Structure formats: structure tokens, C-alpha cells
Image 1 (cartoon, rainbow, N blue to C red):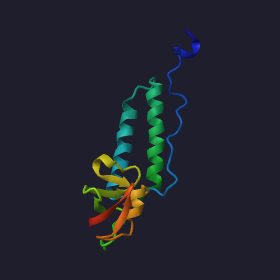
Image 2 (image 1 turned 30 degrees about the horizontal axis):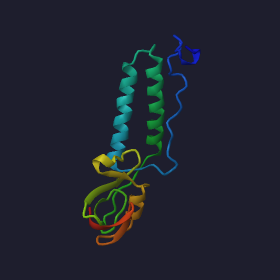
Image 3 (image 1 turned 45 degrees about the horizontal axis):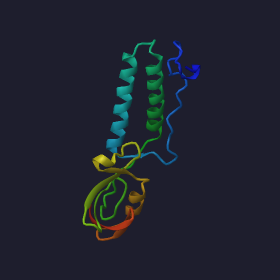
Image 4 (image 1 turned 180 degrees about the horizontal axis):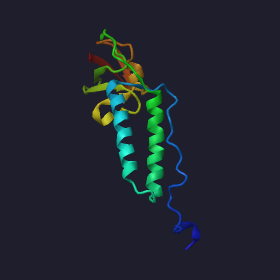
Length: 153
């Protein structure tokens, strides 16, 4: 077998982990998003304290993730919802009806807190951009078709 495919005993695979990429967009977060960042920092700090010093791969991974979340915490800007909710804004929860009859509800949040499976999309997503500033009854582009805004909270 070629030596290229054999792991050396002293090679733990953790020395040269590249930093996690950081978005070039402003780091807008909801209050819940800031709490998630703080929770992730606490979790990683505890994990690092519990990881044996000789586990270089795990330590390198934890340090990399801590660098990422510390940078995200340092640049996070909590966006408070405006008092007027007649228009879609950062933090809004919007229900749309697509042309095929499906209704979907999305909350527009920061990039790190977005999870489409849980109904949150990042403010930089095409649908979120299309929704911003719109009102109930407006039609927006949603993928390949249009959708009507049914409610904004």
C-alpha cells in the first residue's frame, strides 16, 4: 500500500485545522441569537476544560470553534424589533402562501441562528431579502414562483 494512505502514529490530524469561515455580512442577531452564541461559548469552554491535554485533535477542534464563536460574539449586533410591525423586518415572523397552496412560516434571523428545519431563515437569504419591507397582501418571489404574505408578527 502506498505510504500516502497510511496514518503515521504521531499524526493526530488536528494540527492544521483551518479557521471556520466568517461571513462578510454584518453579524445581526436577535436577542435569542445572542443567547445562543453565549451558550455555545459556555459549552465549548466546558468541553475544552474537560478534554485531556494530550488529545491534540479534540483540543485543536475546540480552540478553532472557540475562535469562531468569540469572533461572532465580538461582532454581534442585537437588532431589536421596531415597534411598528406592519412591514417585514429583521426578526419578523412571516407567513406566506405559495401559488401551489402551501403555507409556510419563517422567522428572519441572523446567519448563525438560522435553521430552516425549525422555521428560521437568515436575513441574507433570497426569500428574506424579498420579504424585507413588504406588507400583508404583498406578493414576493419565493423560489421559482410568487407567494403572498398572509401575516407578519
